[in-house]
Image (cartoon, rainbow, N blue to C red; front, top):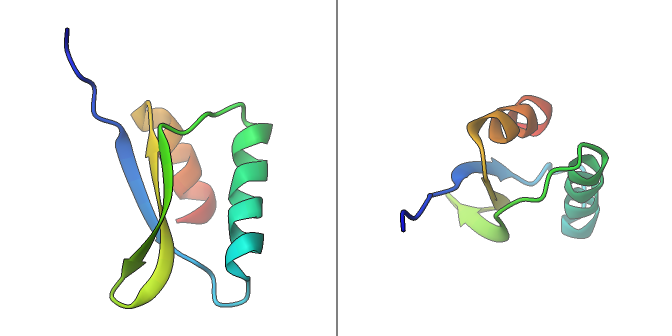
Length: 69
């Protein structure tokens, strides 16, 4: 059995949005595109709050990154 690693997208939370609003915006976009992420977790990158989202395919990751990256 082969383990498939998800394709990861990391992004910072926009300064203009609260954490909850940013997460809600991402979730709404994912739902609208019928994408179920493999993982979705908060992270800190260089002291800035953000998100790490794992996708099952590179195509899904690229669509998300184009929208929010």
